[in-house]
Length: 277
Image 1: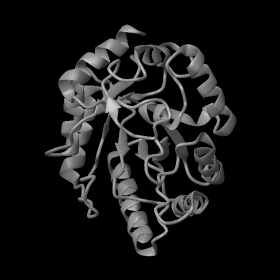
Image 2: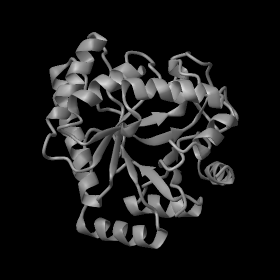
Image 3: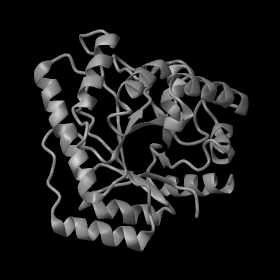
Image 4: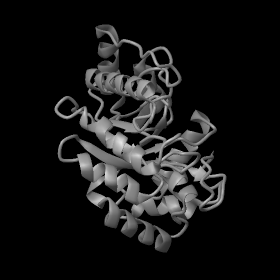
């Protein structure tokens, strides 16, 4: 079977359309929003859409689909009202994944806003433990760039969350290449990747790594600024992505492009990544 490579495709007009757009760009996996990522009120998914989704899955052969949660959700919020709203919205995200049998739900851990990072991490852990026994989709903590007050930009922070919940809730990690580079983890050469994967294994454990977001970075190493660039057109460079496609620890893991130019460029980037296999 081909390795799973794809992009964050559009679910406009129904979730099944994201699968067809994936097929059109040569993808074997996709990431999508199951509802509008900028609205609190999630949409309902009915029997007709589920049937269309299942038909599209069969027709496209796309697998290991990943949903991305709403940008509004903050499972670490110090504001009780916003925290409750976030937990309810996250529960709805999980329910939509269950309806579509989506195996992964990617989410940004949270932002401290007016609290400390330590308090934010504790709140995220408490939020995730609310889903003990009710979630079947694996929840993937996305590594962040550390912009603003977001947490999850250090492997120690991601590890603290994961190790507190993984025996009770199915969780894992999705590495975003732009984010970890902006957070200060160098990945430009195989030797750099070796050091970074050793750090990941030390604080999180490579067995908990389930996926990658593939993005180059407009900003420098350690900038803590999240600005995606097309592969090879940023500060990371193509050697980093060749490594991920060939190293035994990473080549089999699903990889999702979130580069800025959209489907025409994604098609070229997927072909480029395939050429490295």
